[in-house]
Image (cartoon, helix red, strand yellow):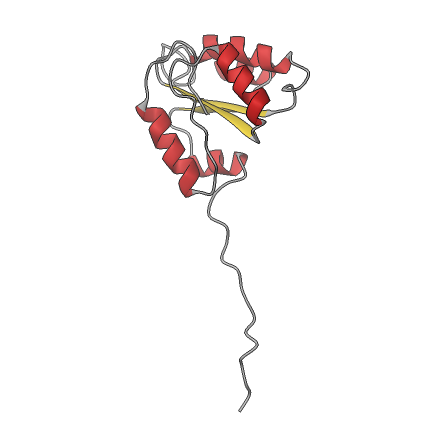
Length: 142
């Protein structure tokens, strides 16, 4: 997980790391202001199941488009799951066309700042699994 290159905010990344880890995810946090080249090289080195990009500075739409185009243009990374979320535009949530444009350019999912966390976790294949029912072999009929 990371933020976009222009976003210096860190608490969103700390929160997401804890959320993902508490729900069964293994997280490598590249931190804030990660340059596109660092994100790409670490994804090539680590080969994550998914790349989560979080942003709160309002430039996620612009920086996210640039990064996803690079990722989808790379032969090895093109099929990697990539999601983005947070404050994607400076004009607030649901900026006209930004979500559709991000998906059209290759993001697997886009989550606005007020997104449902269960939907986010489900998208990543995480969350609390339903309780397993185990048949006891010690039950004796009387």
